[in-house]
Amino acid sequence: MRVDPLTLGRLVALRSLVGLIAPFVGSLADRYGFRLVMQISLIIAGIGTALTGVSSNVLVAALGMAIWGIGLAGFAPMLQAYISSRLDYATRARGIGILEYSWALAGIIGLFAIGHLIQFVDGLGYDGWRAPFFVFAISMFVSAVTIGRFPPEQTPSTAQTSMPLQTDLLHLAAPAPITSRWQSTTKFFDLGSNARSAYATIIGTTCLYFAAMQLLITHGLWLQTEYGLQAIQLGSIAFILGFADLTGSGLVSLITDRIGKKRSVLIGMGGALIGFLLIPFLNKSLVSAMIGIILGRGCFEFAIVSSIPLLSEQSPTQRGKVMTMGAAINLLSSTLASISGPWLYIHYGVWGFSIISAIFIGIAIYIILYNVIEA
Image 1 (spheres, one colour):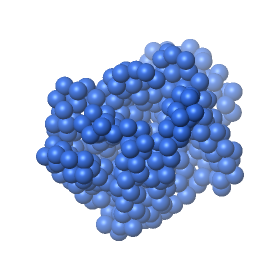
Image 2: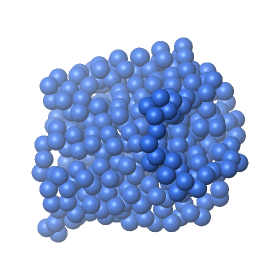
Image 3: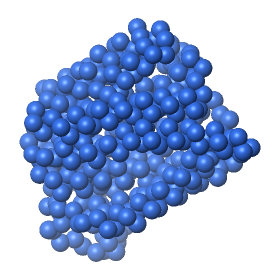
């Protein structure tokens, strides 16, 4: 895009920031169904990625990324909520872990292939960075059609009678007294008798997410600056890191249901903390630096995937809202990490983002350990 790293970080931050609408999307999904919301979200995200791909300036790219972010905010947590509704809590981590293989495969296959795609299109004399966005858009449109063939979700909200959408919109548009609006707002954020544990789960995983995203967003700049890696080499690095993600997700599907979701989250956070503390000392060569990244990222993946089934049962009757609240706060932390990660690296090097990330992981461990109740 011919922009500096800080500007690109702000574009990613914008994409994440619009995800704050996610809880409202989740509330609608609890009423009208997860599949419909997933389909609409994918179509919106596809439009956003296509717009980013054809953009001729930063403003158009920013608009495309904002639309893209809205779609992502509605899709990912709804898919997790949908899977959670189909599985008993005793086997839910296995299903969520298998679902999250997709994240790892995106790195093993997707980003690796995209590195080659960018280089190939560049060799033809075109802007290679545009090509992946069109691949994304087509994939999202195809997926939206496919999801319509999924079996219906099984959730307490499906048994409730829902008022027609038109009536809902008229009700929302009608003026209401200030006290009524305040009551509606507080009711929206009321997660029931287990609210403290639910919010602690959200806040704890958000601290972890912020810590990890500083590394995930900055590691490309770091490896390019200090070790001279270019797009195709970074694609190969993504291929390697994808196996770290796959290992984390695989362990969730194999052992988390047996040892407990909360315990798994804490074990993963502990491993990530060690990894982030070691990264500055391992930044002596590309191989040793990769060892630190793999340790931190793999443990993060194990913790964050284990947190999904843990969060899904904190308020089962409001599962869509709870899952999207978690996603929205994570996106907010990703927005901050998109700004803080590159800034800390540029001004303080690897020590900057790794120490700040380690501090936030320590906070996350404290919150989960003393405030979260497992179903």
